[in-house]
Length: 123
Figure (cartoon, rainbow, N blue to C red):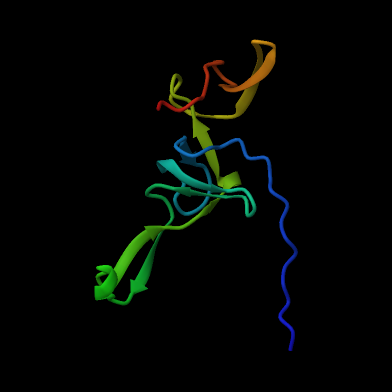
């Protein structure tokens, strides 16, 4: 019997990036805040630090220095369930864009829709 495969998903335009601080607005972890560890554009999901923790049973592997037992780790959460947190007004906000001309090139920067402050993470 042939295996059914799902059609490849089209990558979505996702405004949230790695290292952004986001707040969960829906789901079992609603209200939690964390840093984005990775973004999956194909599936429309993000991995947030300390959010959506699941338990994984792992077998010990002495060759790789892996201890066995029950380990907790993060699970991806849907992009629609998180909002970026503005660093200046310190609340979850929608993302706007400001286009600036720098040396003849258009440069888009993400801004807070409430206060207009840039949303670029501190590096």
